[in-house]
Image (cartoon, rainbow, N blue to C red; front, top):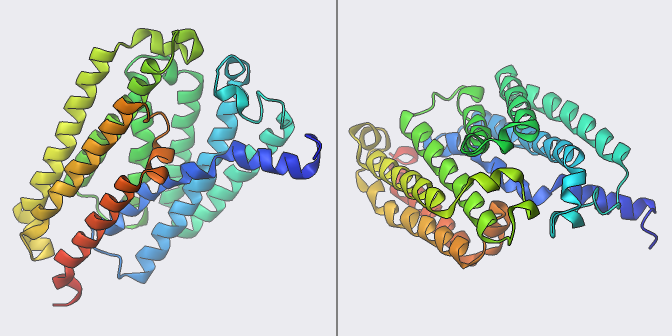
Length: 299
């Protein structure tokens, strides 16, 4: 099929929007899960709508990012195969998609609440700043990535009327800093020269990122562990047994670190989708949470 045919361009457009990355937007659903509101149809509907809105908006940001970085991506061994640097998609298609997805994301987000629209707008601003500036500033780029995840978390809590737990916010922040630090570690360890990757990598070194990962992973695991045994959690869920889910969280973190040192970790979403151990761990953890907190829905 000719590379400039409409079906070929539509496939390239789908690649540009990176739908496999939508898995990250399930972070929005953490509020429903940890607030134990999955049996509330109104809140569940709003959370799912907010998740969909973030999927569209995040794809708009991916299109904008690729438009901004197209020349640099042509020099990259992997990113040069993306639709824009490879010449498989015209720039005006990517520009149009970014605008359409942004408008659609805001429109869908408004169905959940106008607060969700506010978080979507903040997410776009952070994403824009990250693309044009923050990803070139050492350490601040990691916090820029974490900020995007935290806005998803806030959209799924404050955005739909669920007061966010301080445990959830702290654990979420530490977890996203860990994932962003791991991504940078994998990037600098997987290239021969920093010119092959983003310029900020020249300012990083493995020992710094090792320490950032160690601190953030430890803080995330400890905050989750303390959350499961806190008097507030025990009273809310009517069980002290959530502590038995801690090993699954620890294993998930260690498995991800293993993947990173083995040569993965560059693309968080792909690692989560492709690794059976991580999927099994997540499903077992989720099932454990439902079983251990069943007293709430079945008093």
